[in-house]
Image (cartoon, rainbow, N blue to C red; front, side):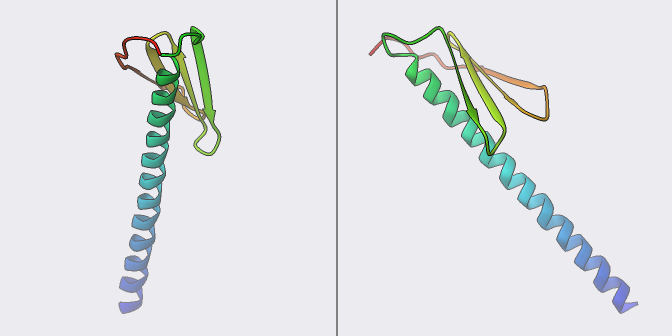
Length: 92
């Protein structure tokens, strides 16, 4: 009985650790997406900025795309897009 309880406890501990690693990885990728999006929007304030711009992040499999003031990013395995707008005004 003690062996069964030990195995069950160990398996739950391993499962919790795997979930924690996945949560950390997704949080880091979300931060990288926001960083890339902010960088693209900041680059859009230059006087000779293109209308559209995109940036890829290979470790997180992210593709961040800017079209005017609108930013969207997608992850490679999924098709769900995340849209947001930052209201930056003026040119550098």
